[in-house]
Image (cartoon, rainbow, N blue to C red; front, side):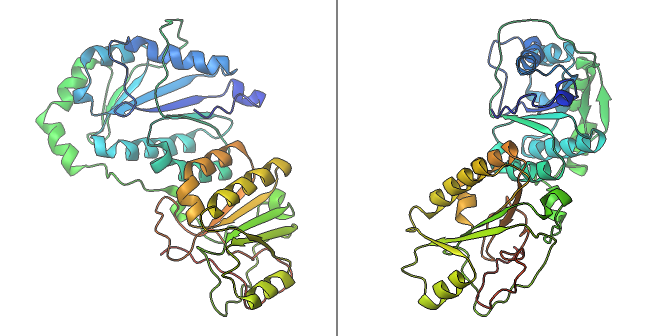
Length: 363
C-alpha cells in the first residue's frame, strides 16, 4: 500500500472515496462484512484522516452471498453489479466522475491487484494535472476490531447497465437474477477496455508557470530510442529552465561522430552495458529527484525502463510533485502509456544540431 499521509491540514477532514475490487480483493472467508468499513476508517484515522468516507464494492454480485451484501449495506458500503471482465472499466469511469464532482483537496483509494497493469500510469498522469491524495491497496487489509463507524451514507445497490438503484438486498438480488437484467447486461454492455482520459491529452503539453523556469533533467536510452538520421529538433513549449541531458547506452557501439556532436552541445554520455542500462537509469532518476525538490521537470526517453519499472515509476510520480514527461520510440508496444508527451530536446534555447534526438509518438 502506498500511504501519502495527511500531509496538509486541508486533506485531513476532506472527502475520501474508496473503489474496491471485490473479485480480486475478496473478504476473507468467515470474516464479518460489517467490519470492512470500520477497518478502512480506522486505517485512515491512524494516518490523521477524519473526513467522510464513501466506499463502493465492484463484482458480479450474483456470486456474493446475501449475508455479505447485508453486512456491507448495513454500514453504508455501496455495492455495484458488474460482469467480471468489465469491473476495472466501471471502477475507472466512476473514479473520473467522482474527480469531476470533487475537486482537491480530497483523497482517493483504489483497492485492486490490477493497480500496476491497468490503473497505474493513467492515474499517475492525472495526479500531475490535478493533485489528490491517492492510496492504493493490492489486497484488503481488515481487522477484527468492530470499533465504531461514522457513516452517514445510505446503503445503495446499483447496476449501471440497467440504471438500477435500490437500498434493499432482496430487491437487488431479484433484479440481477431477472431476465430483464440479463438482456440489459448484453444490450447496454460496459466495455471491458478502459477509456483512458489521458489518451486525449496533447503531446505538446505546455509548461505551467511554476515549471517554466524550473530545473529539467532528461535521461535518454540511446539503445531503445536511437537518433533518426538527419533529424533536426526545433520545438519550443515554454520551458526555459536549466537542462541537463544524459544519453545512456553501450557507447562502444555509438559512432564517434555522434559522440562528438552530442558532447559539443552539452549532452552528457553515460556508458552502460545493455543488461543494466534500465536499472541504472531508474536509480539515477530517483537520486536526482531526491536532490531536486519540486517544482522540477523529469523526462525519460525509453521503452525498456517503462516496461521493467512501470509500477515503481508510478509510485515515484505519486510521491513527488515533479512534472514528468515520458517519450517512447515509434516501435514501442507498451499500451499502458498512451502517447508521446514531448520531444527530447524541445527545452533548449540554443538551436539543436541536426543529429540530435527525436522520440516519436505511438500511432
